[in-house]
Length: 58
Length: 347
Image 1 (cartoon, rainbow over the protein chains, first blue to last red):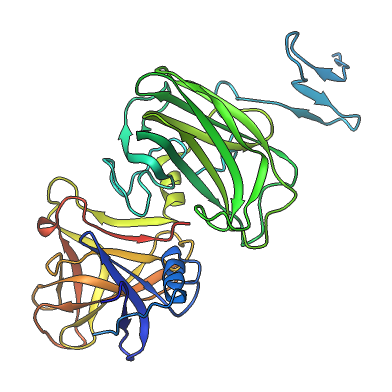
Image 2 (image 1 turned 90 degrees about the vertical axis):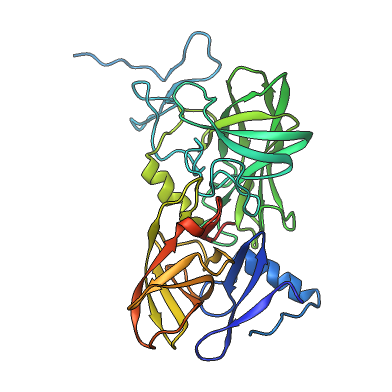
């Protein structure tokens, strides 16, 4: 199981990712406006660039 | 009527002028207070007097943040809100140290990537009130432009980059040093990172970073003003304290896209710095939605978003009819202390 998992929207597209830590989930979008400066997205991008793969959505 | 004609005004024991006259009839003055009160729009720090604690007041730690806008790291094992304060302040931040280098700081957002609001080669003064829990300890201040607060790639130092601000004792003192801005930030810098480092447990409040070489009276802003500024970076809708708050509105309406797929639209009171991250409890019984009857749900995900508004998605525990809408509540009796529904756009 990877750290991150995709979330699909009502159109069936992977629109955000989430992970869980200490009883809380953290989710953020990966498309749209003004998301690339989100520090969680930046960490996620670094994780992807290190060769990791996001788990598919349910 | 008479006119006092002088070039400058200086106290007998001072080494520089308090008022410097110009030949065009104007003057520059080093005013540190007005009638004992502060000047306004001076302080570049947000929540410098540590009054906003949206994440909680007892050792909150969400991605290194406790007190709003102030991160802690390295030997700082916890931060707590404290009423051990100098006169004129309501709260301080107690920073507990494990004895190694203990760091706190605030990243000041630049106007845009590589675009600074700080004047090139100009002086700025860093000041704060601090005391130790016991004994004495030196505290340093560090100022530099960075790509992000913990990333030294493309770091551009101010001059000097770091200074010993002084020696803390068990009595509050106000410390102050002046730093000079470099000619420009790097094109990839996004923050002016300001840090304090020491090696002891201590109390700190009244942090101020202001233009000029002179420390002025601390600029107190209203609670509402500081909270609104903090909410650009962190917006807590609800955080459960020690006791339940009953069924609490989260200020949003839910609509059923299918019989059990719930979409919740929320707007923010302040535009956030970036499209934020949702933080929510993973348990499945923390909320309910009431289209015709109240149905539990939990573990929402952020599914669409921008800086002003977001849409969350969650699955209801039992089905209803697609197309219906209902009020959404936090069932806070089911929450445990410290669980929160919040959005973060911190630097």
